[in-house]
Length: 276
Picture 1 (spheres, rainbow, N blue to C red):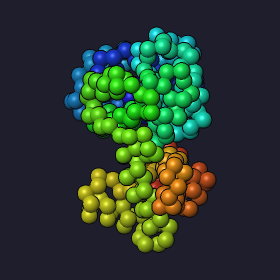
Picture 2: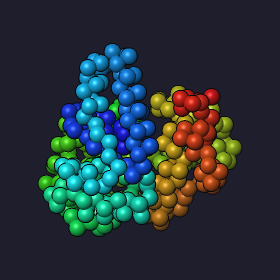
Picture 3: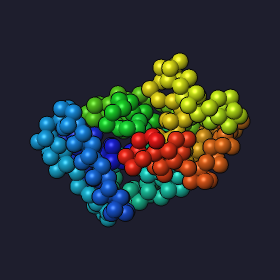
């Protein structure tokens, strides 16, 4: 998600600082961005010169101090509330007081994330959809203390990135994952209970509901660990048993079968991430 956001920002003309504490991860992200841009060139959607210009706008960084000059920060670490709080505490200490700190969280409370900072009025949710260069939507989520100015600035940035901003309230899962994840979880339950096979469940949703991807294939694409984390946020946040994660989902995550990222989930994947 982070590299997708960086790519879109660079293609929109922004100077981008792509940061991670692990330099190999940053290098891999830059390679993936280059490959993504090359595919656009090969399809005739991007001029070779524009590819070079886009790559030239992205600068890698490992040291947190490099972020001291940032004008707007978008965090995209994994869905771990403790990690999110730690990152935002560090960002708050590094970035200038007026800088907005946005989280790409897909389910966690913006209010709680903001509480790790001394600028809760300048903390906001900016939930991009995956893959970021393709998907148009960005959920804008205001926390309890997020200011109107922060909301408008973030909506304006989303527009400059070519995205459509939709406001969601700060409830578990916001709008997108409060609807999407229970559907995926129910598809996993249907598989677990033998209601249908993997291929038949996905075919019903693709052919009968016109979904571009079946829910089990989509779970693999998102990452089964991420699906589980979001379901746990919904379950804990609402206290409603309808959000209880399917036992099969938990078992697959425990086994390390996380989907495309691990090479195997409900489907098996080749080196390029294509199903086998």
